[in-house]
Length: 416
Image 1 (tube, rainbow, N blue to C red):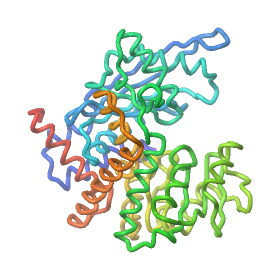
Image 2 (image 1 turned 120 degrees about the vertical axis):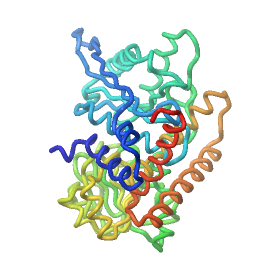
Image 3 (image 1 turned 180 degrees about the vertical axis):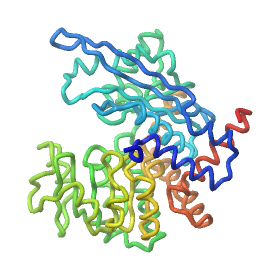
């Protein structure tokens, strides 16, 4: 369905903001499309001696505010429209947290679950060989995303440095700490989101310490959200979690650390003791104070938005809510912390890593957390203030903040 094409959704969201802002036609049209996009065909020799050919992408959406920045996804369903949408959202994400970067994104259509470590390394290096001329700390800086890891980033950085014959730690972020990674990167996406939940709870008059919460998607961000909700908000009751295989719930609450251990040990949240099974679909509609959609895009639609009971929805995933669903949630009084605000902690700490690499001085974990807290709190305040002044939902408010900043940079440069 066209309405679930992620790039069409991203364009539709921009169109709404452009109309509200009265953006001139040229600027609006310019911001609807990537400035540059690349498609690569990567032949990779597999462990069985056969060569497999992969399709890969890199989209540099807009660099008016600085070098493009964005993750690299390895997923069997990866398409150029997914990458375009994510690059657009990265543009707005960097702008809404006011870091001096533009938006980019990359992808490889593959199933890493079916690949060995040596095959992944060959694919990582092949990708860099194809795209290296377009990368650099002052051009475009990739980072990990779905099914890519710090180890994959390490191979990519090494391949880039091998090609260039010199040290370039800032060309890739999300690296292991031993080779230039930043403290605090592992939980940054979830931590930034939970900081926003803390601030939103104050606005809603929600008692954060007694709040109930549920998490759809129990990968990296979902697992950290489970424990950080209690740590940062000073309490909370985890009611339900789910992953790609299904979910579990308990009205009495679950020990977040224990279910994370269970997931890591068994590969699934299923069969966690003293819980009942719940589907991914039903979890979204469970009666909780805070819902964290932390899986893939397009899970909250006009079909189920009217059944969402959570007072506060923190989008740790990219694009989990469709535009039609946004309007329904707004009319029903559900407050949505939109993805490019809520999950901007990841790119913010990636930016911190880039900064540390560039001037070769590294921060403590406490420094990283303090800087992240400040930036996420300021970003939330700017968006919430715009929401109140413009009487619009939070996603449109976030777009108004971000698009205004990017459009201003484009105009100052004389592009439009």
